[in-house]
Structure formats: structure tokens, C-alpha cells
Image (cartoon, rainbow, N blue to C red; front, side, top):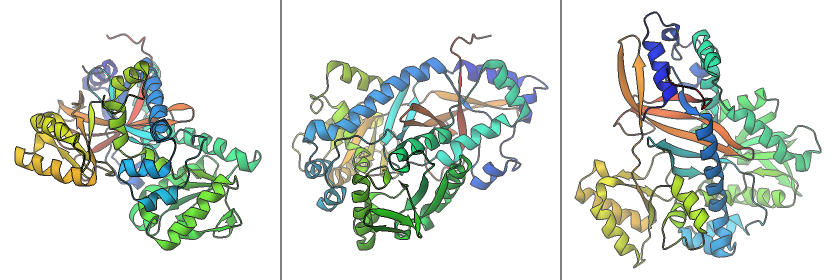
Amino acid sequence: MTDRMTRRYNRELARPGSPLAAVDLNSGTDPALAALGYRYLDRPVFFGEQEIRRFEADLLGTVDLLTSLPERLFDGDTARVCEALGLSPAKAALVGDLQKTKPPRFGRIDAYHDGESLRILEFNASSQTGGQEWVGAVADALLQQDAFREFAGAHGLHHVDTTAELARSLRAAASAVTSGRDPVVALVEGPGGMASYGHAWRPLQRILRGHGLECRLGEIGDLTVDRGRVRFDGTPVDLVYRVFDLDQVVDHPEGRALTERLRDAHRDGRVVLWSPLETDLHANKRWMAYLSDPSLRGHLSAEERATVDRVLPWTRMLTAGRGADRSTVEECRERRADLILKLNEGFAGSGITCGWLVDDRQWERALRQAAEVGAVVQQRVVPRREPVHDPATGRTEDWDSCLGLYWMPGGFAGGGSRLVPSGEPFTLEAARKKLAGVFLYPDATEEN
């Protein structure tokens, strides 16, 4: 069912002479949006405030369950956790002992609304999570448009400022070492990472500076760690915002040594690491099977299972050498058209096979290859249609919306949406992909 504020917006947009027809986020007149180089939807994705707050409670409860699984299932033993996740002993050694104190909540889910409720597709549960550079910029750009600002004011629309929440969270996390002053933040990529990912982190650096934080940007080789004191090009640093993952440093001698010293400085309380290395383990997709599969989730209470089932689709793991997986594989063969296959450590849409887009032979091959490296199979979630009206043509076209919603210590922290015409795949290279902000409205709003 289409969101009622979306219907209202489209009716107003279709009205002859509507000022909303002048809203244009792709004109190049907004320097922040133009610099990012994306294409944008000329309206946001809308949600009722109460719906989001109900979902927030389930989201945070599920995230807390997710991050508790290493302790619940493996007594916090990093080696056992990594073995269960199919990760190398080298990664286990780099992470070291899991800390008794949980790291601050931070991450982003990818989610669809299936017409009845929001459903989590996967968790991005560590500080490499991106997207913050555009979610706020799109929302702010809309509010600079007179027609949209008037519509928003008339209907009580608002958005949660993700980067403002992030800046507050970083200040709070760094307070343990700053004694009340603003922290010096280093946004740090892995060896060679700036060449590949610097385009995403430079805008985030500018945004954090706009929120008053002194923020440096570079690679881990720009850090020195001496007697627990961390410096970036000689400048003392209070908080290291880690945007590299374990794969980037575990086999790189200098990067690994610096990461170990950084890890130890964090644990000694000399610097804050946002986020600790163990959060990379939380991002592994196999945990979703530990939450969903009845044979694996005996550690959950009935109430916890109900919470998970409200937000997480049916999810099962494929693991090489496990006899129990034979029945799972057989079920996956039979249900191909309803399932999606995801590699455990895939990201940005890599390592995905959609069962409804391949034939039986291709699906069989994908299942076999995935089991060799570790993967999950998940129930397909069909997103509700987002009707997008084009005032220039008078036509309304259905699009699909993949939401990126953030959680932080304060709870739900806003987000945005990637949209493609209905039926087209969500990929980084999708030719017609557009980005949109997320705005909330009072649920008491009546249809008219």
C-alpha cells in the first residue's frame, strides 16, 4: 500500500500550476549535491513518525541481540567466533580479546518496506558504513526549495539530521579522553584506500568540520602510535574514525602493526577507536541466520524471537562441510524464485545472486560456490511501489526504494533511500538510480 503522504504529495504535484513542479535537485544549483555527482529524486521518501518509532524499538532490540551473539554463543572467545564465521585465525588474532563493554551503537541497515512493515535486508554494523555524505545533503537541499519548504511546513514534515547525530555521538564517545573539550578526529582509511574510497570520505570530512569538529583525513600510514599516544602527521588525535576493514590490513605488515597498536591504545584509554575492530565481526551476514534459523536460535527468548521475526526475513546459512546444510540446500533448490543468495563478507551489492533472475542450473552453481566460501540465503522481500510523478510528462512511474537507515547511541538516526525503476536491480552501477532523503510526518495526518 502506498504511503498516504506520498499520495498527497503526488496529487499536489500533478495539480496544474503546482509550485512543487519547480523543485529540481539535479539542476546543479546546489553546490553540495552537484559536488557529490549523484542523481536525485525531486521529492523525499515519506514515513509516519509513529511507524518509524515502532520500528526503532525493534531495530535497536535486534541490533543489541546481534552484538550480544559472540558472548551468548561463544563465551566471547574470538577464535571460536571467527571459526564459526569462517574467518581466518589471522583476523581473530588482530581483533584480540572481545571487550566486556559493548561499543557504542552505530551502523546502517538496508531495508525494504513490503507494504505492511519495514524489513531488514542486512546490517552494516561497523564504522566503514557510508552514505552519511549524501543523506543530509539531499534533505537540506529540499528544504532550500521554497515550494517544498512550504509543503513541509503545512504538513509537519521533518527529517532526522544524521550527521548532526553522528557529530554528537563522536563528541560523547571522545569525552572519555578530552575532558570536555572538542576532540581532534582522524578519519582513517587502510593502505591505498584513499585512491578507491576517498571520494566518499572527503565530503564526510567537510560535513564533520561543518559541525565544528577538527577532522583530519588520510590512511593508517599517516598515524604514529608511540607509548599509546596517537598522532596524525604529528598532530595529537583523540578519536580515530576507522573507515578501513580487517581485510585491508590483516595481510599488510605495516598496516597490521599500526592497527594492533591502535587497538591497544584504545583499550588503554589513550584514544577512542570508532569503531573497535570487533565490530567487523558483527557485520558478517551469517549472524542473521543465528537470529532467524530455529535450529540455531535456541539462545533467544520467545519475546526476542518475536522481535526478530517482525523485522528480519527467513534467513539460513550455507557452510561447507556441514551435513545439516543438505536439507537447507534442497529447500533452496525448490524455492529458488523466492530467495536471494548473499556471500557472508560481500558488500556494496557484490556476491549476490537473485534466484528469480537465474535458471535452475545457474542457481545450483551459485549455491555450490557460495557454500565453499560461506553465505546466507534469505527470503526475497518485494518492496512496495513508490509512485514517482513526472510533472513534465504528466506520467506516474513505479519505482522501488531501498532504504539505508542509521542507528546511533541516541537511537534511530535518519537515513536516505536509493531508488530504481521497479524491477531493475539495485547495483552501484544502476543507470537510472536516484537518491532521496527521508522525511517523517505526524501519524495523525488525515487523508484528503
